[in-house]
Image 1: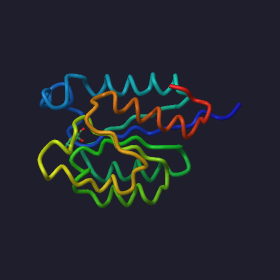
Image 2: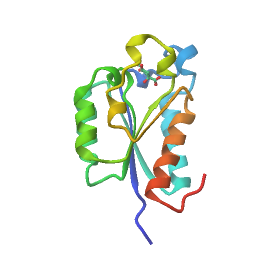
Image 3: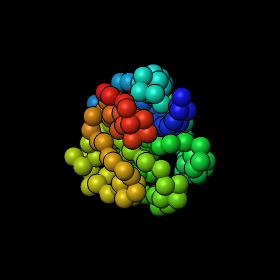
Image 4: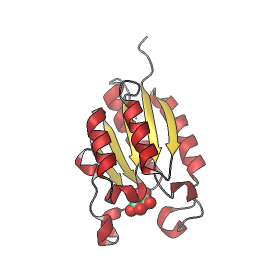
Length: 152
Ligand code: DQA
């Protein structure tokens, strides 16, 4: 039997405050609940999901680098680093893994400074505005790439 592909779910700055943070924009679901849903859905889809969150750009870069050769794909919500981080862009380009960028909110409906994403330039796909469902759809997209027999 083929090994279960590993997927890294990364969340950037301030996403540890989900549930409390601007609930009208980001909802009331906590990061712990999102991570638990990702692990459970990953299992259903035949993926071994590992989740990390950091408020530090360099830590996110290190986890992305470590994914090369150890993970089959990445789901990333880079938070505000989406709009500023060439370092995260470069790390994702370097590891050459299928990467789905997720945003809880629709960044294109919001302030103009959120309209630019450096990460989108290297992402396989982008999901924005669907709340927690975005993470689960991202896992489905990776499962279909990594386990070609997967069905929703
Ligand atoms: C976010 C959107 C970003 O603009 C913001 O800085 C975040 C969260 C989202 O999930 O909607 O921290 O990535």
